[in-house]
Structure formats: structure tokens, C-alpha cells
Image (cartoon, rainbow, N blue to C red):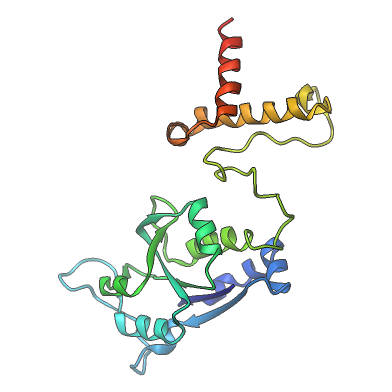
Length: 241
């Protein structure tokens, strides 16, 4: 996969690209990342990329010319362009999988008060990582890049992502490791039993209960499988005596 980041602040990505799973994935050639400095495409001597908004208002808005010239300097028929925007579609694990299947992702990172709205018609999708506002699109781009790169084959151990939170619409079950008893706080006995069928049942139940408690919105949208319904019904009967 090729990733291109259009930004005014490429230095923000320095440590991110050389750390942990992301750094190893890039070293293995699973993805390549390039940066395009939007300011290089400004025509005036002072390299201005922004101006005051028409109609008045606070802040400065990034102009279409340097942004679009930067975009079309790298965009091809295989490219898929993502504009980081608090007004975009919410990012999700489903979208992470969709983006991981692209040959070339272009991340367009705005700054200041935002981008001239005419730029929106030149991108494939506007994406938001949450209902809040940041100073620029660089941090959202890093979040999405991290989520996407780790899904590329060879980035992490095969199967490691299959039971993670949001992969099946539910939150993940609790995980434990050594020691089995830490200052009287014990790991659930079922995990030490060696009974894989019981362990699987426990994990499914915990995933359902945690999602129902912490994210009732996700639980309401989740269509229970026959196995999940059977496990949850059994639990409810036990709880009700």
C-alpha cells in the first residue's frame, strides 16, 4: 500500500512512523508513506496557503489553489482521497478494513479554521475520528493510518485482530496474563481450567455483557448469532434463579 499525506506539518509524523508496529510494517515494505508539503504549491512569494473567510468570521481558511495543486500532483486513478474533517463520516473498524484494501490512500490534512468548501468535491470521502475539533488533520490522519496499517497482512500475527473490539460489532472480552493471583485479585477460574469450550463460552458471554453495559448503542445494533443468544439466555436464567 502507498500512503500520501498532504500537510503543512510533516514533522508531526516523525516519531509515529518509526515506532512499534507501524515502524516495523514500513521497514518490511508492507506500506510506504510519502509527504507532500502543501505550502510548496503556493504561488506568491510568501507561500501563503490561507486567507480570511468571505462573509467575515474568526480564523483563516486554506485556499483551494495550493491544496488542489498539491492533491493533483500525486492523485491517480488508483488513489482514494480522505479529507480529515470533524464534519465527515465517523471512522470505524469497518472503514479501516475498507481503506486497508486500497492501493493508494491520500490523506488531506487541513489546518487553521478549515479548508475552502470547494475542495470537498475533489476528494472521495470526508472522515471524522470523533465529535470534537482539533487544530489540524494530522492527528486524525495518524489515527486512521495506525488502524489501517496494522490490518495489512504481515503487520501483526495472523488472527490477532479477529476477536478485537468492534471486529464483530461487539467490545472485546477481558484479557489476563501472569500471575494468576496478583495480591488476591485472581484470574477467573475458567481461564485456568484448560476447557476450551468453556473458555470460549465465557469469552462470548463477557463480550456481550461488556458491550451491553458500556456501549448499549452497539449492542442494540448487533444481531445475535444462535450461539450468542443461547449463551446469553443461559446466563439470564442463571441470574434469575
